[in-house]
Length: 67
Image (tube, rainbow, N blue to C red; front, top):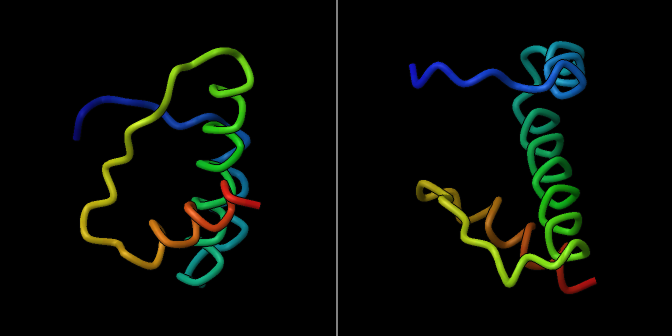
């Protein structure tokens, strides 16, 4: 709806997961962790997440970043 395009690598991973919502969620969390770690490693002062009431994902991101 906003006109944004997802990277092909992410699209491919999501297409493989197809209808398995647990796998799709795991892919999204992994992608976000990689992006956040990259941003912080390259000097970003922090990050802000729009979770949209997805507590499970927020907790998984927090745990992943703490590891």
